[in-house]
Image 1 (spheres, helix red, strand yellow):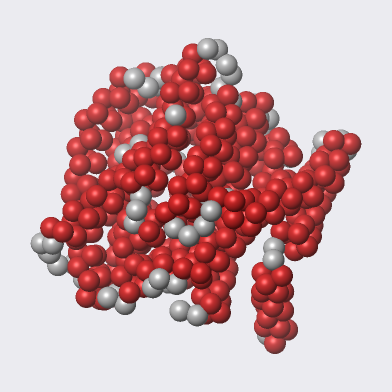
Image 2 (tube, rainbow, N blue to C red):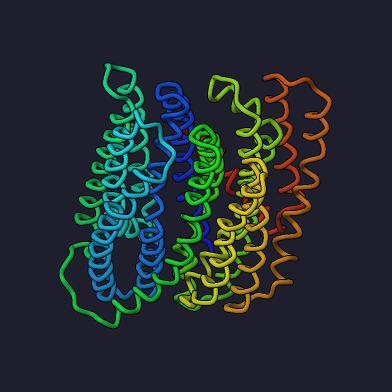
Amino acid sequence: MGTASNTSRIAKNTLLLYFRQILIMLVSLYTVRVVLNVLGAEDYGIYNVVAGVVTMFGFLSGAMATASQRYFAFDLGKEDYEHLKTTFSVTFQIYVLLAVIIVVLAETIGLWFVMNKLVIPPERMTAAIWIYQAAVFSFVMKFVAMPYMASVIAHENMNVYAYVGIAEVILNLAIVFALQIGVYDRLIMYGCLLAIVSLVCTLIYRLYCKHNYNECKFQFVKDKALFKELVSYSGWNLFGSLSGIFKRQGVNIILNLYFGALVNAAYSIALQVSHATSTFAQNFVTAMRPPIIKNYAAEQYDETKRMVFSGCKFVFYLVFIFALPLALEMDIVLNIWLKKEVSETMVTMTRLSVVEVLILSMSFLIMALAQATGKIKKYQSVVGGILLLNLPISWVVLECGFPAYSVVIVAVLVEAIAMLARVSIVGKLTFFTVKEFLVKVAVPCAIVIITSSLIPIYYHCYEDENIFRLCMVTVISVLTTLISVLTIGVTKTEREFIFNKAKNFVSKIKKK
């Protein structure tokens, strides 16, 4: 695997995923606004907190998804295709077993919690049960699709991943139009239609993989050693995924218990914005994760370190270019997006959630490197333990009478501590020191923040609040960020690569 071919493939896959994400984001921004208006703030809050109970079972799916991608990519890196077939079949068997466990947990503990503990108006309880069952079905469908999706990503066929994502968002857009027709209970219909979309996407992934990848033709395999290895690896990922679920949905439930569904709606909007912001970074990470794992499996450690360090910086810059204008002009953005006056709580929560994503983005590829090593026991126990602190600290903070947005301040502080822990642990597991990471990644990122922010902040403070200020702050932020990145934030080699790719892109456009 040459450096040039790796870099070219990553660039191509990243562009594909960015096209996918831009379309998904535009449609999602529109659909969230319409769904919020059609359902109303209370029903929208009910949907998110009820569906969030099901999402809490996602710690199982998150753990297995990471394990699947790692082992598939590792076998491809070693070019061991026979073992890849065995790995897929054993992985699929584990998924089926876990799917049964999820349904049992959801229909017992989860259903009891929704009916007896969540703060839901009595007249909307029937609708809440309906959407809960629809959310369970959607979750199981997406769960069953994960081994196929992991195969697509491991093979680096990002065009397929992009097309399925686009198909999903188009179907979600169709749901928005359907919600505005008829006199049925729109909350129930919303949950049921989303469940149908999940089924369709699962079938697409399954049919494509069975037709194109030999390893995806399932056969029952009894390989106790591999089964034990996958379960053990997933077990530690399970702990990490559990901490992430409690960090989001656990806090969402605590907010419901203290403040009710309206604050859940504000928190859900904050999560939507932070998810949209982080997904731009995740697209780059999705494109880079398989080659990082493959290079590590092939013992090309220098190339792996180069990819990780450069990738960490670029991921951070990709998030920052959106985060800076968003953080400065969040109130105007939310008013335009939602077409209504938004509460100060929603604005503050959303602004802080963007800051949290910015901190997290710098260590996305550190996580990928940790997964590549396979030595994740210490990593997951320490980092997962730190992230789990979100829930008890948030509960204590709210119990002491602090406002709702204080839970996001807690999340920001905990994420900063977790990032330092990630770098320290993975550095010791692999081939770099904390000092090396700080010098080559953290310092350039810090300088870019300072140099990029001065002019936009000055303009924001001295101009009246209006759409013109939003446009100007956005343009100024993008320009100052790009200039800072190209002059200070990258090495000479990285700068030459960027310019060469830009020249090639312009040349292709001129030829057309």
